[in-house]
Length: 96
Image (cartoon, rainbow, N blue to C red; front, side, top):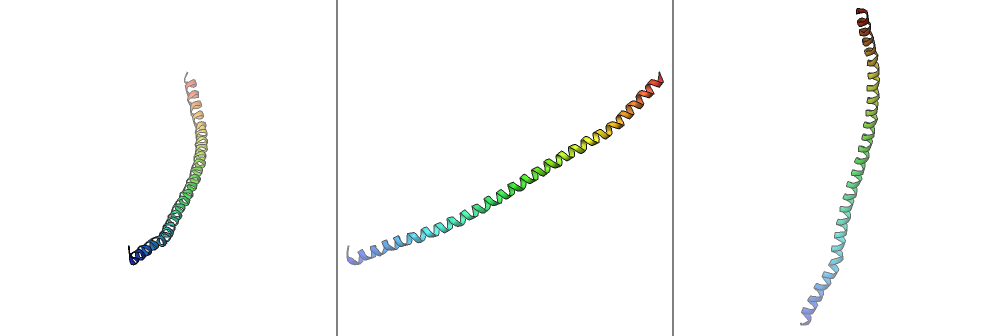
């Protein structure tokens, strides 16, 4: 190899060496941006999970309230059944 060729090979090698950190820096920045997007997505999923949990608790409370109201209605209607049954029993007894 002559001096010019050796110098050209050296320059190309140096450019490759010095270019690597720049490429690594660019890749690191890209990874950082991607990780930030993933972090935001995970945060969003966490918020949605908390909202869903709150909705489940609210639905459970509403369901319990509706069950209590239904029980109250059953008790209220039971009075009418007793009166009707008593009326029927009185009518049946007086027929004999």
